[in-house]
Amino acid sequence: MALVTLTIDNRKVSAEEGQNLLQVIREQGIDMPTLCHLDGLSERGGCRLCVVEEEGSSKLLASCVTAVRENMRVTTGSDRLFRYRRMLVELLFAERNHVCSVCVMNRRCELQSLALRFGVDHLRYDPLYPRLSTDVSHEKYALDHNRCVLCARCVRVCDEVEGVHTLDMMGRGVSCRVIADLNQPWATSRTCTNCGKCVQVCPTGAMYIKETFSAHGEKRPDLPKRIRDGREKHTWGG
Ligand code: SF4
Ligand code: SF4
Ligand code: FES
Image 1 (tube, rainbow, N blue to C red):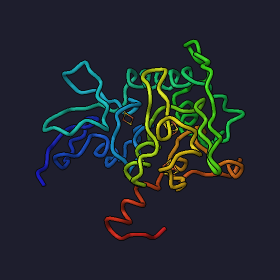
Image 2 (cartoon, helix red, strand yellow; image 1 turned 90 degrees about the vertical axis):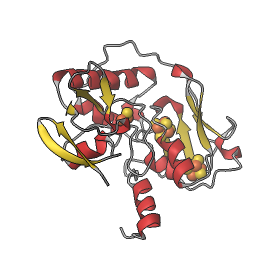
Image 3 (cartoon, rainbow, N blue to C red; image 1 turned 180 degrees about the horizontal axis):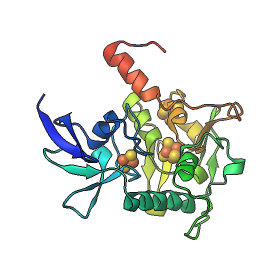
């Protein structure tokens, strides 16, 4: 495998050709915020929280979907990047109805953690307060569109790990929704295996296990990588 040399935060590093910037940044021990990225799933490049600056360019690069290049010089943390990330988190809160105090994932939610990290204690943008539904038709699981941040982790794990592609996205922009099969109640899906992987990777309270998901319910965002490693390397421990 050919190696490339690049500079990250004034540090010269080597990386394998074809690696994405996010992988290399994390290998350097840098705490890069992400939301749509999840180890074990394909990259989506949707949330833009992982943006970095590249010397010589005014454009910000989403590091999870940017391949390393020879001699590139990137900065992972700056006032501009902090402001940008904080604005993205605020916009996610403003787009749907995130009422943390009555959410099943309160205090264990990745969006809430990001808000704490970027000091989001109020919104500078008018919330849209859309009228959205919750699909509670499934025997075990619920899908609450009010809490969805459209990261598509559920869609990808259902397709790439479970292999059934029950879930998908419908619509664009503020009309975008996660759907089951042909936009029908989840319980009527003829492809869903009831595996629950989508629930385990959802970063917010948009997907949860009915009844059992209380203050003690923890999700398993490490699941896709563990399953992939288990299949590929036969490491099923843990
Ligand atoms: S429970 Fe499993 S099969 Fe059903 S939608 Fe979720 S990930 Fe897909
Ligand atoms: S339901 Fe959860 S995992 Fe799926 S797109 Fe929405 S926030 Fe992401
Ligand atoms: S983690 Fe890179 S765009 Fe979401």
